[in-house]
Amino acid sequence: MQNNAYDIIIIGGGVVGSMIARFLSRYELKLLLIEKETDLCMGASSANTAIIHAGYDPLPGSLKAKLNVRGNAMFEQLSQELGFAFERSGDMVVAIGEEEWPNLLALYEMGKQNGVPDMRLFDADEVKRREPKINPSAIGALWAGTTGIVDPFQATIATAENAVMNGATVLFNTSFEDFIIEDGQIKGIKTNRGYFRARWIINVAGIYADAVMHLANSNPDFKITPRRGEYYVFDPADVQINNVLFPVPSAKGKGILVTTTVHGNTIAGPNAQIIADKEDTATTAEGMQEVLEGAQKLVPGINPRFTIATFAGLRAMGNAPCKTPGVDYHADFLIEIAPEIHGLINVAGIESPGLSASPAIAEYVVELLKDAGENLKEKSDFNPIRPARPRFRTMSHAERQALVQTDPAYARVICRCENITEAEIVREIHAPIPATTYDAIKRRTWLGTGRCQGGFDMPLVTQILARELGISELEVSKRGDGSRFLFRRSKDIQEGDHEA
Image (cartoon, rainbow, N blue to C red; front, side, top):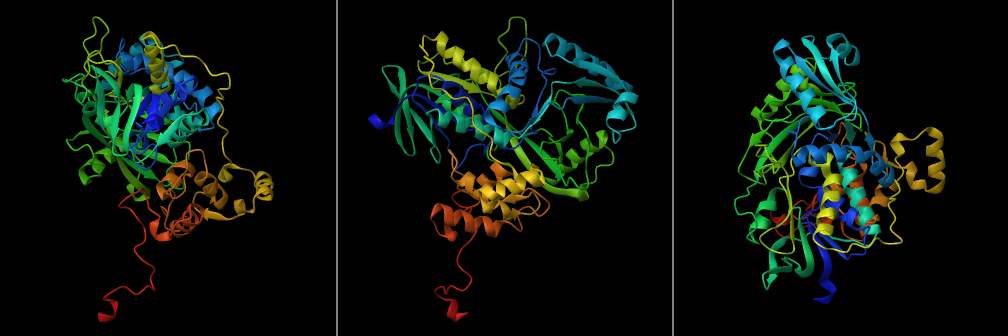
């Protein structure tokens, strides 16, 4: 048990859990982050709009509003320190028809109350100048210059890697099962891989955060309801827009948007479907039609025949009330030291703008620990820098030539659509947090996301993974247990084959 003793254990390897690990790795603490899946960023952090919101739509006075605006301001420095893709793109909330203008003005006022900088109101001519493909019925827009677009996979993985570089431990395939409670205090956790002791447990378990806290009899009335959002991804050769475009929001949420991405694709979504199953990430014909109609309201020329992928993600919709006096609002983040039992911090109900707020949430958790009496001593050798790894597809011809001189494997292109090379794949397999499955490589390099959706590269990546990991190609999987690509070699004789 001694080797399994930590100061703090974080449950959940999404962007918020990874940010918390990175911020706490600045201090002299023994940290453990556990994740039930085979890799980071396999839940809500993997399926979202990849936008860092400005912060004009959370209700003033809520934690969402405070942490959204603060988190937005932190992303530029973080992206520079950690080497992940981030662009301060700005966005337009577009009013289609005169009836939407009053709600747009109300959104503008909320943004001012939340302290959002660089907001302006555009008339129809300015909207159409900035986005020629916009609906001709657009009468104006709210512009927010601080909105950004980000690679959420890189943001999560780079952040966790920096935590590991500063001494944190990350364990995959490790499922939380229960708490170790002694003398009315939490002293650790039970997992499928044994017991781990710690003075603090930070519950960042996404859509399962309610189930985790309830095992400690914390917040028995708190409930997370999954809200599924479906998306289209369009071929960048056929669908290109210039901006992040939002509709005027409704009671259901921000609405179905159309946005550019740091990778050059256009995506559309999400809708908002309340579901019961916390594992149901299937797309539906009805849902995809709803998304398409919403997208075409903003950009009528969007054609579904140029779709290269569809996907769905689940958002952890909680029912925690806003604690600001005088604010009657029941969908705020729940971030607190559990009042019912010592040793537990709950970080739950982190739906949108969770990605945008993630660094501010981590900062907030650090302050909670300090307020609880933790003497957090900064490390003298803390290194905030996680160098970006070379991206062949974004380099000039001269830069590529120089890179190939350092490693000839950079000359072997494995993914033709996205220009991902063998050397890039190998580096991710041997990174501080190794990529050991096809999807893990995909999250880190963007391999397999182009027009052919991995049709060309999958056999080659399988060979590389087997070679570098020292395993059989039959053991290589897409995303972990139950997803192996290959059953047997085509010429191997199986029992009963001769009877066919």
